[in-house]
Structures are given as structure tokens and as C-alpha cells.
Image (cartoon, rainbow, N blue to C red; front, top):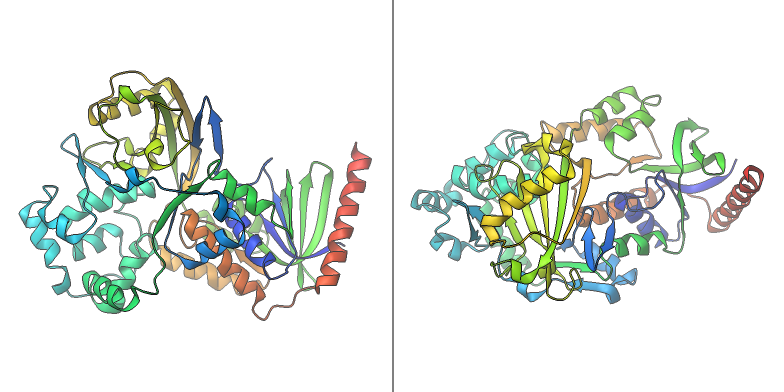
Length: 480
């Protein structure tokens, strides 16, 4: 039977990142992806001069691992920084109008967004004793540390808009790991921020927001075409079996059925898909995966004349608290964020609707979902004309929601994986949903595989890969 060092099931950003980091250490990797292209939900589309993103619209980074990947993969030359116009402001809907959201403590304390009581509660944060439940919700954590007003006006829109989740049910440790870690280490968020600024100012990686020429699909294409990665699309895995110290994996492919033996298998598919695959191996592990819920999100792209919008669009966009909008959670001003997103004299606005706040919206037709987005946008940015371009992308399983005792669930999953050597789970239900998180987690799983694990020698791996290609070509000749 053909052998490989590492087989990755799933060619989304999690699988591509893991594969890329492994190949940097000379490890041969195959990726089997069921769809006709790699990238998962990430896909950039050109339409009438507008460049739209089906899912992830940008990469917001503060991790050195991502800087390294961008540099060493050759992506630095096609990196597109955020435009200066978009650095100016971030907005929040308040009383039916857009209000600039202060990002620093000083401006926050004089902002009309917060009541005097809310400001005083915020200032009291360093004096609040640490503690709380082991796996408390975002709502419980933020209310305890910063007060109810910060939760309702800032954190709830963030959780609903960027994670499509409900702060009442979302695990704080999973969704806000940095804030929770600051409290646990320093006893207060404020104290933690001050200490980190004093001790790590020079060594910390600078925060950077960027995309790429051609959109986020450029990231996917670059990783998928990296030397050492053998990408196969249209490969639907049917069976995974532990056999003689390795894993036998069988898939239905365009050339017929194919099996191989891998020392390590990295499963990066969504939790429900992974659960089905793993049920015969470990029913308990599969049930833990089935317990992970996903939020549905509709993405509405609208292109229009710049003169049709009264607002200066001098920022990244806006988020909407639940009391301001039950359906639309946020809007990005893509043509303000990055160049080349709209034709000259035009703007591109991307709205996000649904999530756990309004799961029913995923079943609305294009006309209704676009009408809802327009209804919300018109008074906020002063729309004076209908858009010339409308595109709707739907994701019924857009994002995993870190609801319930999520940390305990992850610990239970890790415990069961320790009984299955050579099997790894690495998807956005573990470690964060952003592209940044997935690139960092990809390096982490690569390190786990490399540390003290037996792999094929480079010569053996090359011979095995050649045999696989020969068999695949033979199967193609027979079936055609």
C-alpha cells in the first residue's frame, strides 16, 4: 500500500496552513479535499470590477508566526495593507446613528457613547477582585469586570458581528482568550495591559491589517501550490482505520477509489463531517464533535456610485448592538479598506446578517435578504440610490460557536485524541476562527507531529509519493 508521512483531510485554510508549516521542515504532505477547489469558504470573486470576499475579508495580525509565513511563502510582494482612510475610525450604531468607537481609554472616557455611570464602572475595573466561574460566558465575564454597559454597547456587537455568536452562551475563555488570560495572570485586565505595555513594547509583534492583490484567494493559492504539498481535489474520504501503527485512509476520487497509509492524519473538516468519519473509531470523540454548534450567516455585497452615499466612509465599517438591529450584525466598507475593491468612482459595502442573533435569515431569498440590508444601511450612511451590483453568499455552517462549557469539551477531545496516536484534529472549532488563528494553529499541529514522532526518511517519502502518482495515473487511464 502507498505510504505518506502526513495526510491532511480537508483543504481549507487550517489544512493548508498545517501542510505549509510541515513542508518547511522537509516533510512530505498530501491534502485530500472533497470540493473542486482548495480554500474552503475563502474565495475571492471578480464581478463587474468589484472584488468580493465570500468569507474572510482580511487578515488582522499581531502574531510573529503569521509574519514569518507571509514572508517565507513569497506573499509579502502581493500583500495589500489597509488604506489610511480605513485606519481613522470604527463605528458603532447608537440611537439609529453611527458613532465613532474610541479604541483608547482616554478618548473612551470622554466619548458620548458611554454614560457617566458606565465610565465610572469602567474605571473601577482594576479594583474588581478576580475570579468567576471556571468556564463563564462572555456576558458573565464582561459584566463582572467591565460592567453591563460595555457588554451591551461594545462586546455584544463584537461577538455577534465577528463570531456570529451569542455572548450569553459563548465561553469567555474561548472567545476572549487574551482578556481572560490577563485577568488570570494579573488579577485585572487593566493591570495586565499596563504591564504588557511596559515589558513587551519592544518585542511584541506590531498589529497589522492586510489582504492581498487579488483578494484572500491569493493566500489560498499560494499555500496550495507550495513545493512539497500534493493537493488533490474531489477526494471524498469514506473510511479511516487504524492499522499496523499507521492510518489507512480510503476516499472516492474522480479516478475511482483510492487508499493509502499515513503515519499521521490531520482532520481539518468541520466538526459534523469529522464526527461522521470518526464514529467507527471513537464514538465518544464523535459525540463531542457533534455537540459543537454552528451559526448560519448571509453575506450581502453591494456596489454603487460613490455619490450615492452621503457618509464619508472614513473607517472600516460598523457593528450593530442587538437593540439597534435584530438582523444585520455589521457592515464593512471594503473599498475604504483596500484598493482595487471597486471601480473608480464606486464603493463596495459588505453586510453580515443572521448568526445566532437571527438564524432564520439564512432561509430568506436573495431579494429579501438584500432588502433587509438596504433598509438598515439607508439611514445610517445616507444611501440615495439603489446599488448597481448585489451579490449574496450564504453559509449555513459559517462559524462554530463556542457555546457552553467549551473549554471542558476541548479538554475532553484532547484526552480522547491521546488514545489515538497519529490522529490530529485541527479546525476552526479549536483555537479560534480567524485566518490569523488558523495559520498559527497550523504551525502548532506541525510542531506536534515533528516533535519526537517517527516519519519516513526523505528518500522513502519521495519514492512513496512517486508510487502514489503512478497508481493515480493508472487509475485515470483505466477509468477514462
